[in-house]
Amino acid sequence: MSLVADTKVPSSPPHDCPGGCGREVPHRKLSCPDCWWLLPVELRKAVTHGTNRLTAVGEAARWLRENVAEVQAASTPAPTLRITIADPFGGAPHGGRRG
Image (cartoon, rainbow, N blue to C red; front, side, top):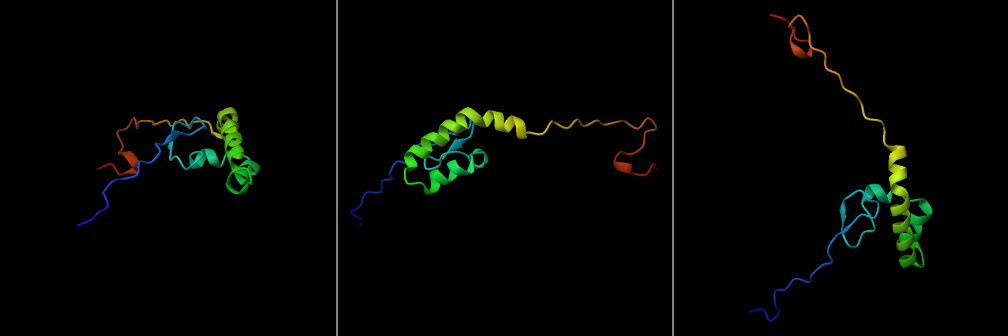
C-alpha cells in the first residue's frame, strides 16, 4: 500500500509563439523552432547563455513581435502556379500509351 497520493503536479499551460505564427509553445520555450531561428544570433545567445536571461527573454520576445512578420514576408518564396493541360486527343495521363 502506497502512502503517497497519486497526484500529478499541474504544469503551466502552453503559450502562443511571440512570433505571431499561431503555434502553441511549451511554457519552457520562448518560441517555436521556426521563429527561434529568425532571431538574431546575439539574442539567441543571450537567451541561452547570458547572465541576465530574464531580460534577454523579454528582449527576444519583443524582437519577434516587432520583426518576425517582416522577416517571414521577405524570406517566403512566391507561390508556384501549377497549370494542367488536357490532352485534346484523349491520351492517357502521365505519358501512358493509348491502347
